[in-house]
Length: 193
Image (cartoon, rainbow, N blue to C red; front, side, top):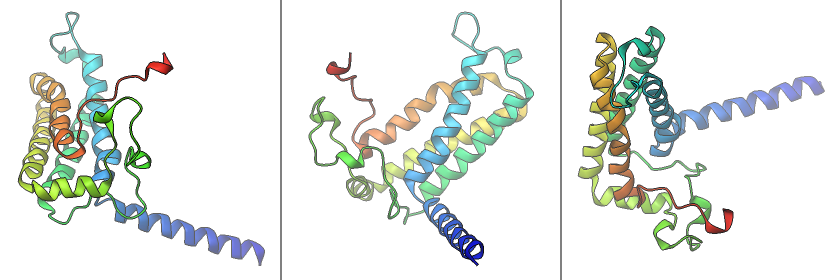
């Protein structure tokens, strides 16, 4: 009986976790942490391994068939999620219970200066609502980068891979700055050196 009740409790917890995960899949926070950052890292890791000796281009021979498959998937996932961000007018920054980076520090002065005061999900949501057209444009730019990479992966086009990879940081920063309030990481605290 104890074993059965334990299994029922675990089953209920798993169902709750599944519900929370699927509900969270429609937030901007979930899009960034579970899709965009992971796929961007796949792209950057692949291009880092493929640079030529001068570091100013990629060598096609250094991008394996497995890499191209992973890049196609990364491009597809980024395109799909960015398209969802652009086309879903009800998208939220974070669902109830989700924490965004820095949320624990909202309203507390940053030790390294005012320019890195944290923004809350509500503040970010307000910024997006105030300039939805810009948010949609930035999301569409990211979706285009994903689509370009997905297409480039079918033809093993290293020039497009290089363009998308080198422009990806700007795609991200161009949205982070107006809505999250910064596109630069904070400087390393002086007392930590």
